[in-house]
Length: 133
Image 1 (cartoon, rainbow, N blue to C red):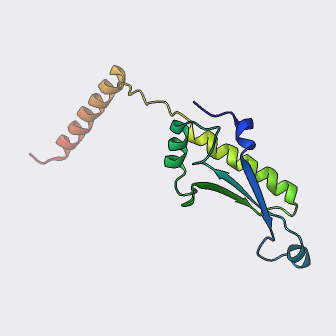
Image 2 (cartoon, rainbow, N blue to C red; image 1 turned 120 degrees about the vertical axis):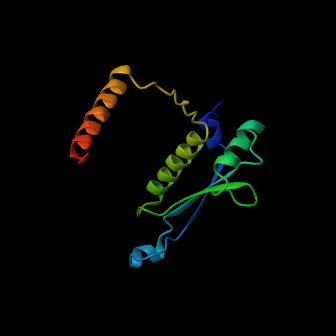
C-alpha cells in the first residue's frame, strides 16, 4: 500500500547551497541549489513494510544514515528547484510502490502456425529443385 504523500511532506527537510558550474556572478552569490532530505529509517508515517520496500528499491539513493537525498540545481530560482525536488521525490516514492502486471503468455494462432509450415514446405521444394539429383 502506497503512503499518503501529504503526510510524507511533513517529514521532509530542505537544505540550500550555491550551485556549481558556470553562470558568472549570479551563481556565485545566490543559493539556488536545493537538497531534499527524507529520513526513511526514522519516519513515523511509513510502516515497516513500506520502509523495507523503499530501502530495497532506492538503496543507491539512500546514504548510510538511512536518509534519501534528492538534489536539484537545474534552474536559476530556488523556488523552482524546490518544486522540482518535490516532484522527483514523489516520482521516486511512487515508483517504489508500482506493481507491474504479470505477463500472460499467449498461444500462437493456428492460422499463423499453418502459414509457417506451408512456407517451409514451399522453400524446401524450391531448394529440392535446385539440386542436381
